[in-house]
Image (cartoon, rainbow, N blue to C red; front, side, top):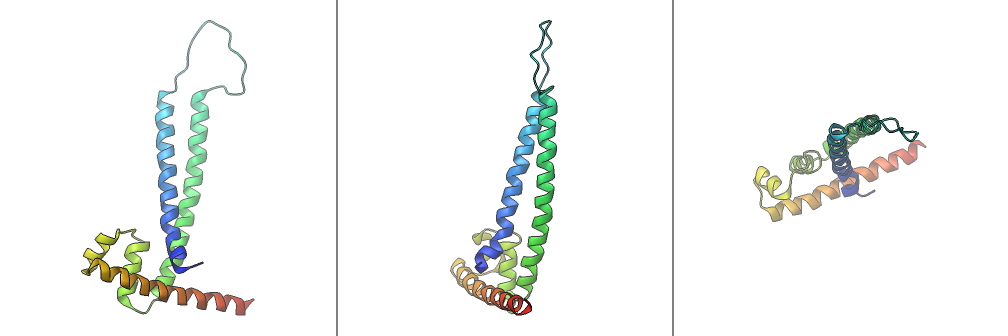
Length: 146
């Protein structure tokens, strides 16, 4: 796994969680719209006794998935933080934290660090090279342990 792939894991998982939260919101809206229809006609037997109960079950299931993914996100961020802390250059560490843990846009990141956008991109490339080196060292240590 490249440095960029490793560092981008948190962002991708964070977006996935956001999308699932939007699904829960949508299901909650659907649940408030779900109503029963009262008629004197006999009902057709079906395994589903209530649309509302079905929607609530889906919401609970999705919330469990979201909670598990949040736990995973916290673990991934801890791994990323550990690697970023291993980077010697403080500017590189700050850039990596702002980009891959705070999910800052490039323009905001450059402004916050008081650098030009071009220099920020250059530093980013150098910071990724430093992270690649750290990941390679960790991988070789793991092979030696086996």
